[in-house]
Image 1 (tube, rainbow, N blue to C red):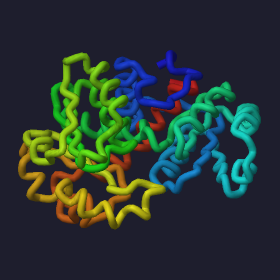
Image 2 (image 1 turned 30 degrees about the vertical axis):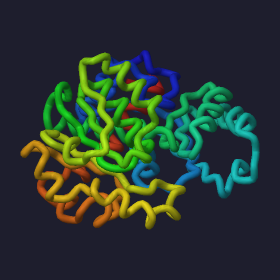
Image 3 (image 1 turned 180 degrees about the horizontal axis):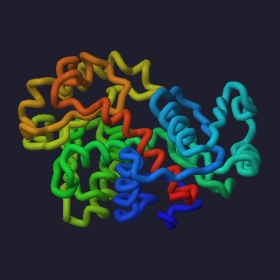
Length: 306
């Protein structure tokens, strides 16, 4: 994993397919306790968006590696008062060893990376959520041993979660089908990038038909219908997205051994029913736990201690 040392992770596509597989292997080793890298490094968390799993999992992962965490809440730092990204990035570069940023605009993340020499991690932007997909792939691998040849059906908004899933599936040999209302489809540029990565070896499909997407799939995935910053649109979106709800009826079209994933937080009764998220096919809690293990692997790799 030395090839990742000092690099940024702004998009899942920043990794090669081999590097992605190596990260997943390391995450499994860390979870099993068969390898225990240690460091005395400092991770900064600069989160412009609310967070539970990302904040806690990154913090726990860094503490377990032996490092320290600084929570750089914008409301109590100068970035919340309009300090330019160029200034903040160059100062934090002198204090920290690695920085995870959760923000809105992907361009702001890229600006931080251009001014800082330390590794910058995308902890979520409106374009992508790559760290979540590392945990998702780890969870799928735990359930099916091999990723190659599986089919993942994603139901709902073609948002940042959909974008990173499309890329991650293409990189790991998983067929991916995204079912969204036509006006909420994932960005065509991301779909085309994933298709180029897949190079005809796996299927990358966008459809408006939820049943067609889920039929025979081994993994059924969903996310909220209104992402952070879109809460005012939630009520108007519900009737549009209702056909894409992951219910017991929709799940019955999937493979009989299919698992269900959700990146959380979940709006039960909207994008997923209570019966499904609490049902025997749900792997949502394993998926949430794996955020810590996958990010620990990422931190160890970028810091050069694994």
